[in-house]
Length: 419
Image (cartoon, rainbow, N blue to C red):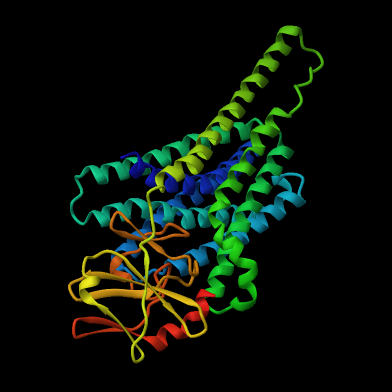
């Protein structure tokens, strides 16, 4: 039970933190500046981003392949990058929000907010959607309950943490708040840039052969980005604690000055609360994640050879609806892995143990579902064998005389992916 809860709590919490922290910092900057115009712009952008993410999820669910997750997220990131860079430039090059170009600042705030919510919002909303879809009509079970409970707790933990971080941000002086916001946005920019490079490499828009040596370590450790977010966020309460005690204004008595000191100490409590919430979230992302995934093991890859240019696998070996992994040794020594899963009846999903986005990191089976090992995205069984997203790269096959047959030449052609 606990493991199932954590498997849904952790991704929901991490996705929520990634979007909520920069947004609450931006909100704090706007509130501290006390400009009603920008407050309204920010509120409208939140609404547009929230409902826009829900709309995209509904369209994706209703039309299956009409919305490409990879393309949509790339477009959202491009808009987000433009908004974030321009917003940083405006905040860094001006002494206050009031002196910045109002039109440009409104556009930057809107683009940053909407794009972040669209990009991460879709990922967040797809978690409960996938829970309901995989229930396959049997919704009122303990399994579904634990999964939805984990998802709700993840959002709740991140939401409480976001509120504490927001209150701590309000207690910071303007320059310190702008500094913390800037390094938070730089961290987000870094993650978004890596994703765009991945997509462009997968689409052959960039020379993957030359970049893979640089990008491979970054892609392999992409899951560490959440720890960068936590590390950057902890700068906020530290900056709050490092603020000097309020100076005594001229013309006030001791009792009035004590009230000022008391108010300053109360503000420090928000910093303490922010640190405690960050510690809780780090605990879930580290030890909680280890526990959630401790029993997951890869399906063993079965060595297989070709006969007269064909690899033959008896259908009875793959007719159980579970994920099966095979490995073929290519002529130049590469170990080419591929997966097979029965989708239903005589329909099979056959593809490489690799995808265009995450590379040859492979797939595992969890709760009867196929999961990408690197990004933890769940595959829709019906789409395995089709191009796109994090799906296994499809390979041609045919069924004949009780065997599933894969062309040796097709695997030889893909061997460079497993170097």
